[in-house]
Image: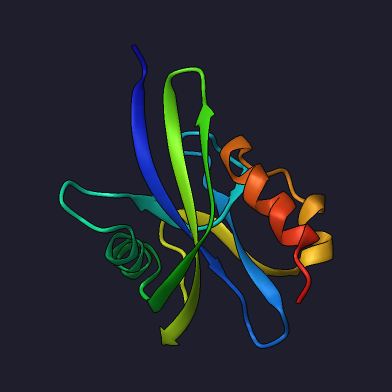
Length: 132
């Protein structure tokens, strides 16, 4: 049986209504695909504090996770991911990628131009349809 991994990811929007997108590095699983930044929820952790911790660890920045935006389960070849995307905002500092190859800000209508990790696609599609 495949292991199911519970993962949280941040939907961070800037003042220009652009969304933060992170490119997975070649050394990560599912390499060179775009995703919303985040990581695994640790035992006993709630989803909001898990996301805030992950962004602090991976991007040296502080965010406030506020509300669940999208939740889905995606089955990859070797594992299953339970991905919860959460609307968040930067509260302190900028974000610097340490594990990702690159970070970019994109308008909703341009999100489809990137090659997204399959688990992130439902949230991408919901964002594109969302009216600001």
